[in-house]
Image 1 (cartoon, rainbow, N blue to C red):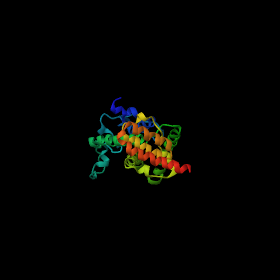
Image 2: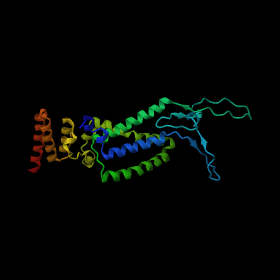
Image 3: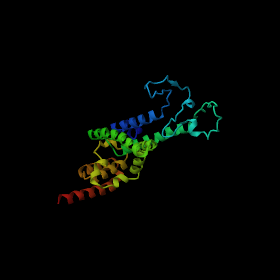
Image 4: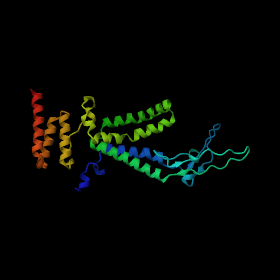
Length: 261
């Protein structure tokens, strides 16, 4: 098997939950960055839509486009104060919107970082797609929209933009917490299932550090038999770590003995 395919972060090794989350994150960013080619106005009295206005270039779009950065900014948001016009003089045509290539590229970079952090978090924590996560996802999506409505009600519609940004880029903070071992340091029993490690096929591990780390987490979760079995298999595959692994096995065995007395 190629080395890249053995890496847990390779797309071929992603869990079903990781694939689902990545697709959701991509979908969320797509409609917020998709530049419209046509727009309509609705008559407030009849409710009928006007003849569509077609846009040939981005500079013709009269409203902001882009997320989290606006790469199309209308002239009325960026132009200086307009000079006083003589009474009865016709209004000048609006200036074209400004288009920022830097902001457009910046959106791709920021979204890419968020999705990469999401993959790192889910793959590092070994989350699996299960009935529990399916129910959690079904509950989280309506809660996300309901909380957004509450934010708009309490802080205004401008705050909703920051709310969406905070939720969308939250995997970055979660990935940093996992990278620097914040989650494993938490010992609250009620959250134990969040970071518990399920026994896996030993072929999943491509280096001794990952196998030893998972064996240690199994130990901390109280699954001592699985922990010892994983330690032993790691020692057989990477004999240069036998001495350290044997010390870990002795520590786990001592906990088992104390629990049985």
